[in-house]
Length: 163
Image 1 (tube, rainbow, N blue to C red):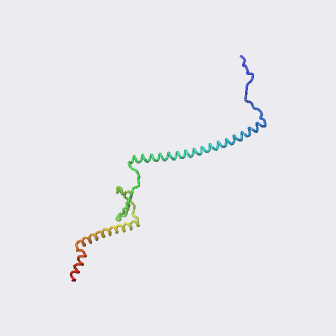
Image 2 (cartoon, rainbow, N blue to C red):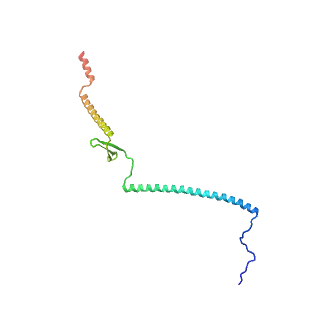
Image 3 (tube, one colour):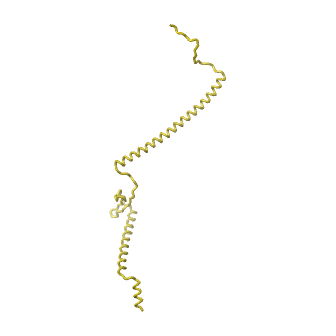
């Protein structure tokens, strides 16, 4: 059976452009080049935005992981680091200073005493001893005063005897 050809058919084939068509296509080419440059710029901006967003997401993830690890460690050790008031104590005889927690009274650090610390500790020890001595003297004076009659009565007796 012979193949039957259609009488008319359409095909895309090269055709010469007129001067006007060349001019119109040139203007369209310029508009398209501008659109392409804008689209490329948008794409680069989107890439940069995504880089920043990805970087921020990675930082956020690292923070979350660090927090999770801290919590797991605190649970495992059953302790947490907190600010605790500590006081330095000086051992003049041993030549050491001890850092002691005020909440538990437990020593957490021992260091060799510096010369300046030794001098200050000696001064504090003397001041404390002087304070104790002063308290003793004041107590003794209180006892003496309690034994003596009031001073006003002594003055009246002196006046009466002079008359």
